[in-house]
Image (tube, rainbow, N blue to C red):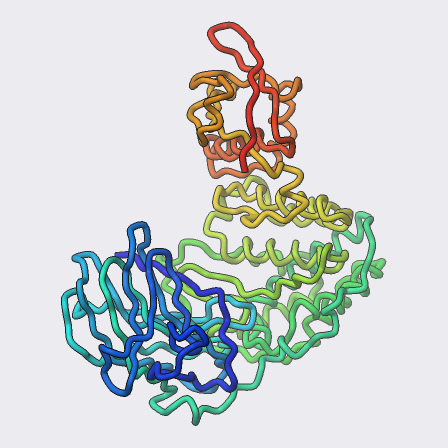
Length: 517
């Protein structure tokens, strides 16, 4: 059975890092829920219970109350940046009226300062699948050196009622009150460029493009291999910003190599180590590092990069989490309406490096992935408006040819470009024509458009023009998936009504399509 997770979005104001009210004795202002605890999940309710208790005067109860919901969660959220190897949550649970497919258990989720998962653990308690009296359970997970916020709680999946009492949180077998705070990683202490890089330019010449290509490759290589970066000791984003001016000012290959070499020399020396390597027949994909020996890199820089590879970092990584499916923990710089040129290049390098070192279908990308840097460096430097920047990002994403890659939360400018509203029709692309396959909302019925109609024009403009306009921004692993995604975009717009010319049985007629939210 696959795990289903619900991450609470409401942070509870707490003083100190020791969880309060783990026995659920104190109530919130409304007198319904224990203080500092929240209940989340459609179809589920949580209450303080003074009748069914393990000890003291109160417990907390989570129960399924209506159809439609499938997962409920009671949780408390605390700051958690401590030294230690393992985190344990224990408590007493009791259940009633559980269904055959119901599950309940304890959960622990540790997030880093960027809100990305550092580690998680959950349990399915088969003992709670029937009516049970109070039993003690516990769950343990590894601590993370990058942990910042801990979500702890109890979940219920499916029908039933679960009571919880006397929770306790331990670190290495000792109460959290005795824990020693962990020093923040150096990457979180460097704030020099929090307000911007200070670099504003929109044009680069051919030599500068080649300089920036090499810089991007070296920067990404060091990010995922150098131990000092892997430990989070260095704000690698800001290291890039610091070296950019010298790289841009370089006028010879030697100057370029020395400027980029300073990026390596600003880090601690790397000692060759016995690196863990799988057997050759177990290696399916590995990055191509032959570029390190290209003449344009230069012997001194190449030697430094080979030394880093020989002592490459293999522990828990500050910027990369999880296996076999990696997630990437990056500062989001949400306060920037439009990133300046330095930060736009940073975005390009980040994406290029993730694809270069972690994308399993790198081999299937059309052309040489190195060329993506050459193509998009001038595009990203010139993208000095929100829309041009967001379209540049979308085209870069499209270039890997994967339906799963996208800007999932569309920013305002991109949403306005595609359209904030849409015609509630599902289209399929058949023999170079957009054909109506089904309605997505009852409002489409009143338009008179029928299943099988061919869309030939939108507001008097041939649909082929709209298709060509949006084609560069539609991504797909296959031609079919690309056109499926494209079909969702061509009928988006910002007007509340639209005139659609449709062909039906050899005749063309105009129908009024209604946009819906």
